Structures are given as C-alpha cells and as structure tokens.
Image 1 (cartoon, rainbow, N blue to C red):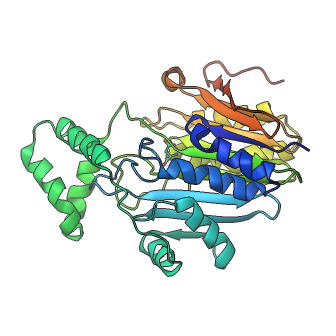
Image 2: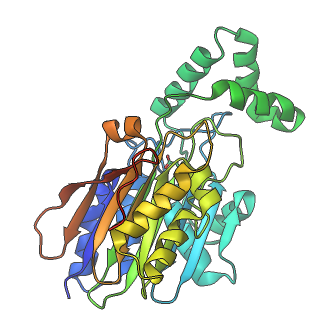
Amino acid sequence: MNGFVVASRNGELGIGAAIEVLRRGGSALDAVEAGTRLVEASEADTSVGRGGLPNVLGEVELDASIMDGSTRAAGAVGAVRDYQHAITLARRVMEDLPHVTLAGPGAERFAAALGMDRTTLLTPASRELWRTHMVERLGGDAEAVRSLLALPDRADDEPAAVAGHVRRMLDPNRNTGTVNFIARDQDGHIASAVSTSGWEWKHPGRLGDTPLIGAGNYADDRYGAATCTGHGEVTTRCGTARSVVLYLKLGMSLVDSLTEAALDTETLDDPQSGGIEILAVDRDGGYAAVITGADRAEQDATFVHQSTDMAEFAVLPRRLISAEAPPKPR
Ligand code: ASP
C-alpha cells in the first residue's frame, strides 16, 4: 500500500519531510510530526510556531494536537509560550503522561522537564505587525497603546483593560492560519497533527479548536481523520473534526461528510467568523478538503497532497461550501 500525506497549503514546507518518513517505512505518526516541525520552525509562517502572531499583549502562545488513529491516543497543548515545537510537546503528553491536554504554565513546566529548548517565539517582524496593528486599531489613542505595551508586566492588575483592548484590536480582515497534516502509512494507519499560534491579538490564555481533540483534530483508522483551520470558535462549538469522522462512520461519503460538517458551522451566528477549512481522509485512502466563506476562498482555497510514489506534491482545490447554496446530497 502506498503511503500518502495531505496538508493545508502552508504544509507544503513540511510535506517532503513527512513523505520521506513514510518512504523509509516510518509511521504515520512520525510523518505528521516531522512535517509539522518544519512549519513550526519557519519564521516566514506567521500563523504557526516561531514567528507566529502574538496575543493582545504581544506574547506568542501556541496550540497543537496530535492523534494516532490506530489507538485513538491523543495529546494536546494550549497557550504554550517559549517552546517552538508545540507538536512534539503534544506528542510527549500523549506518550508520557496519563493525560490528553496540558495548557499554559503546566505545559511549559512539562517542556522544561523534558529538556526541550526554550526560545523566543516573537520575531521582530511579528512584533512590528502587532505594533502597527495596535496603533491603527486604537486610532491614535496613545494612552491605550502605552498601556498595552506596559501590560505584559502588570497584566494581573489590569484584567478589564486587557479584555477591552482585545475587543478594540479585533480585525475584520484578520489573517488566520494553522497547519494541518494527515498521513496514512504503508500499514494503513492514519495520524493527524495540527499546530497554530491561534487567533492573532487574542486574549491571553484563549484556546482555539487546535488543542481540543474532536474540534480541530480527530483520527480513527476505522473510518478516517479530519483536521481544521479557520475560525476556531465555530469548529469548537460544532466538534467539527469528530463530526466528520462520525458522519463517515454512519456511512456517508467523504465529500458528504465534509459538506455536512461544514454546513453545521454555517448554521452558527458568529459575526467574527470569516469561515473555516476542513481537510479529511477516509479509511479507503480517499482525501478531500472544503472551505466556507466566499471571501476567504478567494484568498486561497487549496491544499497539498503527495503519495510515496510521487516525486513532488500536488496542489489541489478545496470545495466551497455555502449555507445559501448547499450542494445537493449525493
Ligand atoms: N483555528 C485556529 C484558531 O482558531 C486559527 C486559524 O486556523 O486561523 O486558533
């Protein structure tokens, strides 16, 4: 059986490494971790790992999760500072602890205990984007800017100010992003990995869908796997990744399962949501991806795929799913 990997478009950076793992006879779990690590290490990607855009206080907080479809073991970390490979930390939670999810200081404590390298996640370029946006959104309110710059040192004293600044910093055209990887190895096992710096300018401690197993990530060899990007508040409320796998379990096709799960999110009234993407595979080796939100789809509606017998990855289109014109059931 040929192994293969699918990833969100920004996963093109790591898909070659993931395929190499499979070519050497490695596991799907090792493949998705290897691919994700390269994206996390890239400063150019401002939505994942080092170089990710920060929270409202200018601090980068990472979320990640990994799931092994052969056992349905899972690990996740949320709101992690100072450690760039959140995906490896999530895997160690899965393998070394009797837990699924660690967040914030507890997750950082675990990373330190493992001897992982501490690093500065905020790059000068991401800091500049934060500062520029802050000045723009706070509309020349110099006192607000000054207070925001000072808040990291005295955040405990200013909870109301922080919440207010999050609302004022909301960007209607915000750029979102996360990396998704799903791999199937030569033994037919499936694994999935998701990593992100989350919603930029978010409230400190905000967890998106990425570290919530069932929301942004789910894998089960018996049916398939699904991973999400985009507005995590709606995929969290719908349990989107698990929904796709459950629809597969109920006998729906891959495309119908993705469509149904995407339409579930469209029924929520969330004015902040510009849309979501879901990437999925089924147990027979099928793969597909969808997107909601026409404006979002105009920016980029693609994903990448490579199997072990392909020299290069292929860029493939996502289907646009809209509640106004739902596709006919097939
Ligand atoms: N899903 C991520 C989150 O909500 C962000 C994104 O993919 O744009 O944190």
